[in-house]
Each structure stands twice: as structure tokens, then as C-alpha cells.
Image 1 (cartoon, rainbow, N blue to C red):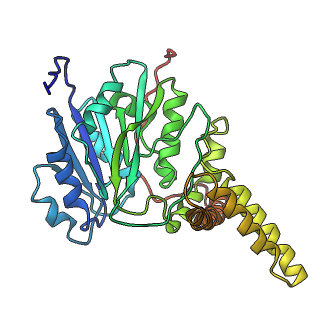
Image 2 (tube, rainbow, N blue to C red; image 1 turned 180 degrees about the vertical axis):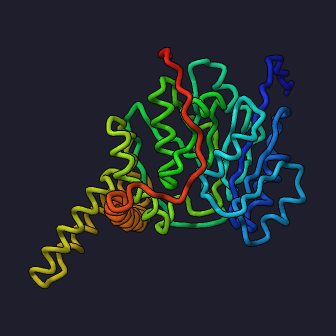
Image 3 (spheres, helix red, strand yellow; image 1 turned 90 degrees about the horizontal axis):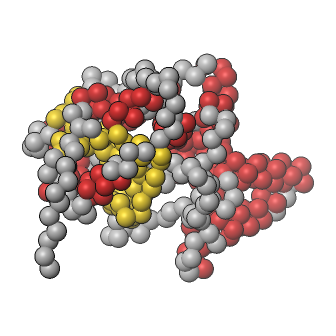
Length: 328
């Protein structure tokens, strides 16, 4: 089959990889970016966020720009640091535990930016087929605003700087905050299931659900008008409230029937969001319910913490927004 030559201008693209103690995956990640993806006009920047394992040693083997932080600042702040050094007019983000298996990964991002109204593009993830892990069950939501996951995403650098980059005061809600800011500024935010990479770790681990939840109330307070698409049949906050109610009734009645019944019902409803066999529906549905409960508890903790500490979070490196007076 004859190969079609591209004659249009190929903009410089900077791929930014934040990494903290990623010795297990960073080598495979960089090899896939440099060897599998065939985009010719790219640079790769790795922000080593004060790793204490062999990550720094492994990075020395690759022809990439390495920025080493003296102390960890978190993934959102690390990405901001990478963008400051980026030469490309388009910046692409990928996590160190993700692998590119598509030779046109970057090119697929670039083609969207031919539309001058598009400011950000989000890709999707697929499981490592060699591993059989539990996962959340999602349904297709209908909303004009779907959050971009920074583990596979691209932005116009000018737009990223205009809106102020990732918000370091919400280290675990940075993706949502940045999506909201880009959307508010008048730029289009689009997604493509044709832009896929392999996520080698569990995409939605329970251990991170609590951390994501801590940003729920700060996000709602700062961006009250934004209503992102909800991928679960029953939202994490509703599940948390139901389980809290069931537990309260059980304690009063001294018989654990309500909590168990609610967990079974919610698990089946959440599991039914995916077209998979019944055993998988029950297993993934139960996992989803536990994940949502962890998220709910994190939201309660984050809400109390934000009131007591006045939003003093770990991240610290950010851009000053440079929003022009004229409306886009």
C-alpha cells in the first residue's frame, strides 16, 4: 500500500513526562515515545520529581531533557515546570507508567489543532492485556464538558500559559481545574478514542480515590458552574451518603442488613453500566462501590481540611494567568 506523504507544516511538539520513583516503567515509557511514535519534530522533557530510586540513573541512557527537582512538588507542579522549558507550540503530557503503542500517537493530537478554536485534546487508555485487574465500570455520559486526563493529553502551549497551567493548590484535582479553565476561556476541549495508550497500572486504584476526593469541595467552590460528565451510574457522593445512612440505621438496629443491602444494590447498578458477563458485573460493580466510598471519605476530609487550613496544599509551582481582555 502506498504511503501518503504529509506536506503540511509539522509544528514542534514537546512531550512532558513527570516522574517520581518510576524505575519500574520509565524505560519502557521513553522507548515507546522515542522509537514507536514516528513524529519527526518532537522533543521530550522528563521532570524527575526528586526520585529516590533508580529513575535518575535510567534517564541518563536516553536523549531527553531532564529537569531534576530538589524536593518533590507533585505531578501538577512538575508538569508546569516542564511546560516552562518546552520549545514546542503544542505540549503533550503522558505519565511515566504509560506506554505508546501507536506510531501516530502525536500526529493524531496534532491534526486536531488544525482547527484554530481547539485549545486542548484528551486521549483515552486501554488496559495492559497481560494483567487482569479490577476496574471501575463506566457508562457513556452526555455532557458538553468531559474532563481531560493529563496522562494522555495535549494543549496549545499558548492556551496552557494563558489560563495559568495546572492549579497546584489542587494537586489531585489538577486535571479537572485545568479543563474548567480552558473551557471558561472560550477554547474548545475535545476528546478522541482514536488516541489510545497503554496504562500499565490500575487506571482507577482505590488508594488514589481518597486523594481525588479531597479536591471535590474545593473544585465545587472554585468552579460552581462547571458540571463535568459523570461516568458512573450512581455518583460517588450519593453512594457515600447512602452507605452512611445504611450504617447509621444498622448501628441503631444492631443488625447489619441495610449497609449490606445497599452495597449489593449499588454494586449491581454500577456494574450494569458495562456490557460484560454477569460475574464481571458483580466483581467490578463491588470494586466501583468501594472506590466511590473512598472518594466520598476523601471529599469529607478535603472539605474539612480546606476550611481549617485555608487551602494550603503541597503544590507550589504555577503560572500567573494571562487572560486577554478581548473575548475569544
